Image (cartoon, rainbow over the protein chains, first blue to last red):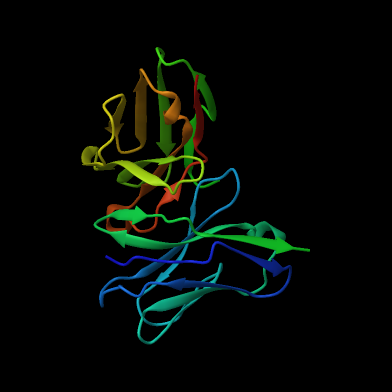
Length: 108
Length: 113
């Protein structure tokens, strides 16, 4: 199983890039890395996932280190609406395992 | 709007009451999930349904009883709950083959008095 660890919280200035780290040192070769976020009073929202190549979609970019022991989620131009808890997810056997996540506060 | 709706959004019930939570998805998915989110604790998976068949019961007490009459609807029947069951109950759905990409409803905030 891939256990993930993330910082408890971080602040980011509006309009700047937000870089959210995640350590997953026990990840195995065929396990993907998944990211979700949860805005206050809403359910979690899928963001992106990747295996070993960098990935980008309309929401974010995901950079995975070559040894796959850590990754960084990048929100390229953070807005106030990006304030949320961001989860680096352990997924196994159809089950998402949510940890405490990183509380990201975007400040004007 | 995620395509997953939950009713009611808020519910207050006594320990002797019986109530049901409803979830409906309009995404054509074939897997549905119930999660519990308590204050200060991570989301906990409760139940998983694939093609209307329950495939996961994550050691949930029997006072929580799920029902999945079809692939678009999911219920959580509640009876004789305890105050510690107060939490946000979230429903999610996905395509079975993409179960890592789940779409969540807004949740039902349950308070047990």
